Image (spheres, chains in turn purple, blue):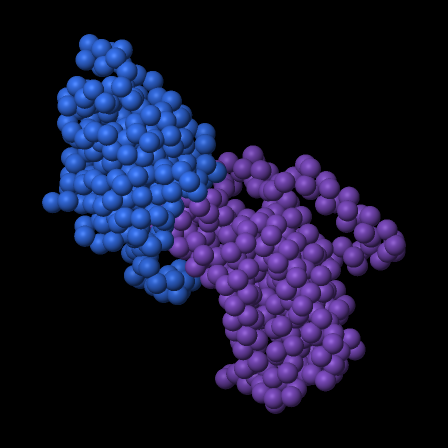
Length: 327
Length: 265
């Protein structure tokens, strides 16, 4: 087995796992898997920003929240179908991302991170205090499930049960992975990675760096909004506390532990940190202690995260074949 | 035909006049040298051309089109490629990726179309990707970097890294290449190779070259005309022979011994 085979086999294994899981797991573990799916979308969207264009957003959960609330407003107050609300919530957070990026992306590094943190806090304050519309700290309950869809040959699919929801979420996980992969590996990827490596130099070799940064920030916000909409209609309850600073930080921790600048890393990080709290239920009080220890360990001994460890493992045991020039 | 025309260019940093009423013309297909003592404003002139600084006064034209007020990436697209003092490239990327980044500004320019092409991967997108790769490989071969294609740029020998710098600039398909001290840190044989390379760039690729250099041997060999700056002002202009004989230049920059050294060789 060589390196190239692994590249082809691992996505197929991943796909099979996604397909088989609903039929072997009981209800609660499946619920956790669906939640992991939402986190995967979120972390991948943040990874596009942090890992590829190199700007860390500390307030990414704000777009998650905007997507969730937009979708809920549209379905519960506007009476629109979920299937319309889903893309619209993505687009609304994308537009907001673009507008915020217009101003904040002039900053770089820690200053940009602080700016996004402030923005996320503003959004959270609005959600908490604008009681008439958002329900305030109590949140909104009894959010409907996605509407039934009628497919030819299969009949109608109802989203009351967990399994169709699970597949719905993982469909969008695959879409996210596909889009992020294509953006990063196409010609666009060269411009994006150039900005990460050296923004000033990239500008001097003809790349409109601000435009690419705004573009990536918007795409990133789009997927976060999409995840918000899926989340709201899956758990049927949202409150400002689901979209706080803590959640934004969780996303960052997931990226660091999983491995930044890769696509596998965020997936591993998201799944691991959604499942870990459940495994540690018995020693709940010491949970944060364990998180901290893992984080320190990863930063000190595996700066590439788990994906980095996996990569060095595969490179060692399944050597890379000499590739053709330019592939 | 004049490619680059600088008209009464001025740049003041506070009270300091880094460039003072400089006018010059670079003709199509020419290798022009810019020399002068340290701090005489050579790099500032380059930074004004490539848009890093905006001039305090005066105009810069490339093929009759004004460069003032344009952003850096626009100027690259108009046809000015540049390298920087020291080594400047994406050191954590492979040589191939470096050149591909350089090629990027000549790919389909609209961002959303680029996005859709990348995501949906239409036939046109695939063709464009193949074309760009071929172009990058051509640049790599031209510069003799083929053995290092997949190496990280920071891991290859220094002279090869310098060639990567030049390669990235060449990949942007410039009309004019600004080289800022390309021979710094190179040994004697490498400097001779660089001399050949600059000539090849001009003769084979038809790219005009504007060169800042302290290595007098290289400047005198490779340049067809030389401009000498001192305190931001042009003190001499002419063919290498005239510059060597110019009293003011010898006084300000070259020194008597250096002339002997160059002429002896």
